[in-house]
Length: 84
Image (cartoon, rainbow, N blue to C red; front, side, top):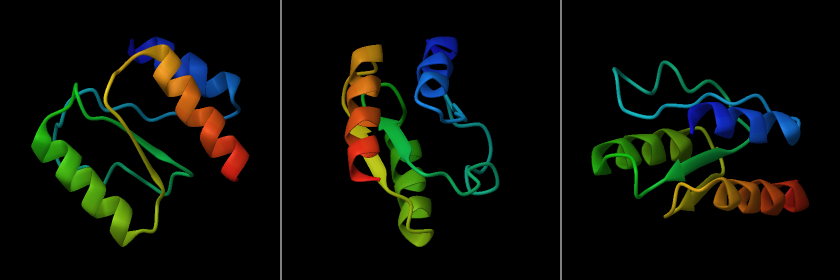
């Protein structure tokens, strides 16, 4: 799915950083994205909390999606593109 997520983001004109699991501090890896997408059903609760805290500190919009499907990602990106 990681490659598929990357391809979908590329189709929308975005470069994706994908973290399927927490390995080290997300704070150092996150950068300054236009949007943070959290698949809440597939990542750990701890990762959701730390990513959400970093997003709040840096004023990064967050899309929380329960399912990790490609169509859910497309819907989130469609919504973000309309808002931007």
